[in-house]
Image (cartoon, rainbow, N blue to C red; front, side, top):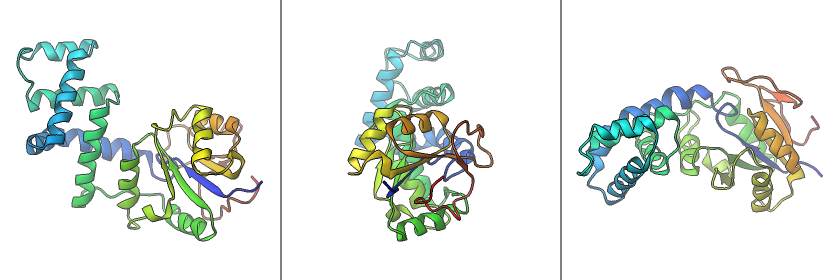
Length: 247
């Protein structure tokens, strides 16, 4: 069988890790309180705030309990208090669903205003266009939500690249370290794993995709925290990569 589909991770693969860790997350963190203040009258935002409050009151982590004890537990928690708890969750790397939702909304606002522009690696846009023109089906699989993925590719230095992709997958499909996730992705793309090339900077993800039967490449990009490819072939530039070639 030959490669017909290219499945791409984002962070450390097509976009620098630093954009997520040093730009997106700090931007959301700094914007939480003013965003909630400005939009608390919105029905959807009000519901998210209630969901955050429920999660906080049920959170058994010592830091969460300590922060809650500083509040009037009998009253509705203020925007300032909820923002402090959400910032604490970010610091603890807790991916609470309403927090991810709020982050996505804040990033959407930042992209729309032009404050946020995704810095894809310089070789990526041309490679994506070349692969699409050569008949490959392009797809994304990232731990970031599908809307966040589309915002990133829709607001990069090369303009809107979302139209180059046919499929979008996030952790709703399944854990990125699980073989079953890659089997599900192949099925949803109406192909077999052997027809898919998956590129990622995570050895655990590559192991799972390999077990599922996909072809794999390790993304070795400047600035990535882990650059040891293990048993996998590695790539650091897509300029001359033809996914149909052996590697």
